Length: 212
Image (tube, rainbow, N blue to C red; front, side, top):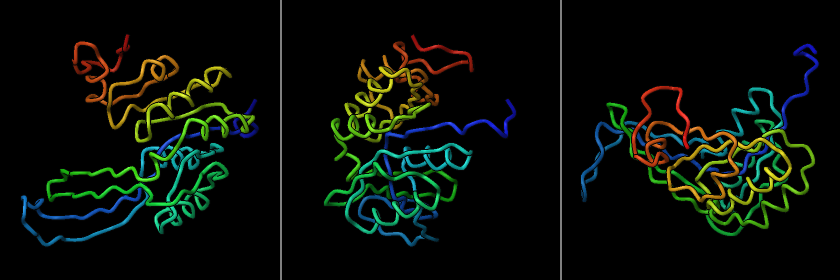
């Protein structure tokens, strides 16, 4: 079958959204100190949202399962998803703030990030299970660790029961629930996350490594 006639993959992302609030400074302030910044920008982020947007841009049909607050950040995030061609049927809204990430970027490129989950932590196991039960076509389910692990674990278990391929980005790193790891077909850590997953705490010394 030619690539032109191939059906686009159906991807479901169960994960986080953040509004990145980025300040560019020559150096980060010390405790109790105020410094003048060079510039400031606001952008859409969150590991789940980034996965959804990039999957959509590469031609996949993407559904997002997430929870946003009832603030302006929730409104703008929802609008951005729709502009990116992402199905927001299963994006819930709850009272309170959406997730935000204040970021300080220094002149040498180093950065400091504070992740405030907000409504991301309002996601529940029943919410995710209900959403997945209503979605008939799923080729791949993708998750990360910016929502509560028990929610991701429930999503991955439901996907595995249906024979759906699961991909886990274990970031920001935390020890994985056994049931989440068991139901992950692909785990895609960076070097730091790999060291956390490996029983010996060693970093990978090649690209060909299997986590046992």
